[in-house]
Length: 158
Image (cartoon, rainbow, N blue to C red; front, side, top):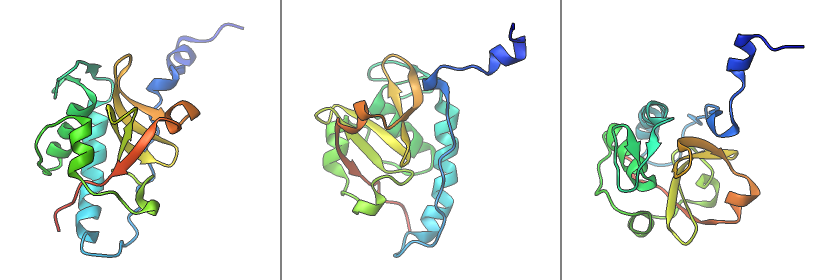
């Protein structure tokens, strides 16, 4: 049987599928609860606005990004400012999260000898600027899981 045009339009390559992360707005312990509640929807909006943008080394937007430029850009859009630096320097700049925060939305995830960075969506995947596909949601497949170097949290305003 032939697929209708509407059905064909629904079929997307895996890297274009972008499930919304589960945002945990349960009260956090510590002074960042109010910051988290305001921050997470802003960060998700910033990510969604950049999905599908093309990759360009050294770019910070508005229509092209490299991995650290993407991370810098989405945090800037939420009002959280820090110097635009490489993935390796971001890793050195920010503190490691507790183990239970590693796969929480907004945590930075680093790969391949600290040469690549993305933002955790949830335990199932992350967002990043891929050389081949641009800014995409990527599942945590075995390929990515075995390349993780570590995680960092960007401090939120109180």
